[in-house]
Every structure is written in structure tokens, then in C-alpha cells.
Length: 291
Image (cartoon, rainbow, N blue to C red; front, side, top):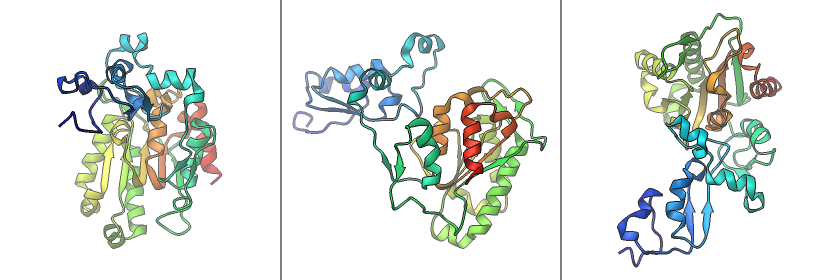
């Protein structure tokens, strides 16, 4: 069977399976190459004459649990090395078919030198007429304080989560329950912190209003939303403190993933007085204010 197949699909590690022993391929495609460990890539590369890496090094990096290994260079992927060392061999896909142009504009400016733009069919699409596609709900001055709940779950901000759920209910009411169900409009709720995700999931389960829409609402961490998209995305940033500490929110690749999950509407909730001490969030906040 394998000797006659013109295309073989496998994981990088599985490409070393005995059924592929001695096989050579004219072209190897490595998908999600920006999340692939270089050592794993070489397992497959040695079987190919030509290699095409597909992925986005400005989004999620590989998952590496050993800090020493990451510091030693394991977190630096083969794709990143090629982007840096041989930029002439890199092609950027400049047209995206997922999101409203206003949502796409800031990530395009910050991560891709302003070269990515929306296809005409999605450029201005929205759920509601005259709706603002991108909103930041600033919780500054509302005594919305983060709490630390342990190393495994990080931070939680219950007041911010409750505000998110209120805004979610209000937006569903504006759309109309019947239309939402008939057109299968879906929602994603993202938070970088597991504790916030778990709290939001529990509150949605308890909500009588949201019960009929549970199948249309997904709540997950940024990593859990990689590769997915929703019509409407809510992002709860959680951090709110007097010191401007934002922890791993400073890993901007994760924010790039979170922002670009939305097709037609993006709502960010966060304490601007805390977050805008970082240049990325300051510029994002200023951009949204001008919309």
C-alpha cells in the first residue's frame, strides 16, 4: 500500500516508522512548522529532496516543558531560523479570508509590517448593522482586582468575568435568540488564564439565559483556540494591579492568536491603566479608541 501511495501523511515522529524505512519523497510539507521542534523536523527532512514549511512564527511557539531546554535553544524553531537567516526564501500569504478588516488591521501592522489585508468578501462583514467590529471595555477605576490562585491556574478576575457575561448576554439579545440559533452564530470566550476560563465555564453552566446557547459558546485558553475561529470573540485579559505587571501577557504571539480568532466582532476586556504600560497594549488601546 505505502509503496504505491503518492501522498503519505504522518506526524514528524511517525515519519520514522518502519513502513517508511528507505522511502524517499520529492517534496515534504511540514504544516504548523512554527510549532514544530527542530529536532522533530529533521526526522522527516532526511527523507525528502525538497521541503516546504507552512506556519506562522508570529503565533504560538512549540510547547516545551523543560525550561533549561528552552533556554538552550530548543524553543527556536527551524522555521524561525529560516525566516531570520534566509528571508529571501520566505513567502507571506497576504490575503486573509477570516476577519473584518478593522480586526485584521492592528495585527497586520504590528506583526506583518502592514502587508496582510482582508479579502473583499470579508472586508466589512458584520452581524449587526452599524456595529463596531472591535471594542475594548476598559475596567480601570472599577476596583476589578486580579487574584492569584496558584501556579497551575495563575490569575483570576471575577468582576471582569461577570462583566464579560453581562456583555455577552446583551449582545445575544441585540442579535435575537431566534436569529442566532437559525444562522448558527457562534461565540468564543478566551482568557490566557486557566482559572478565569474555569470560572467563566461554571458561570455559563449556571446561567438560565445562556443555557439554550451553550452549544454555540466555546470557552478556552489562547492555546486551546489555536487553529479555530468564531463569529464573535470575547477576550478577558484578567490582569489589574497598581504595578503594571502583566506576566505572560507580554508573550505577544499569544495575543496575536487571540485577536485573530474573530470573524466579525471582537470585544476585549481589560484594565487599561495596567495593560497600557506595555507598548503593544497601549498602541492597541489607542487604535481601538479611534474606531
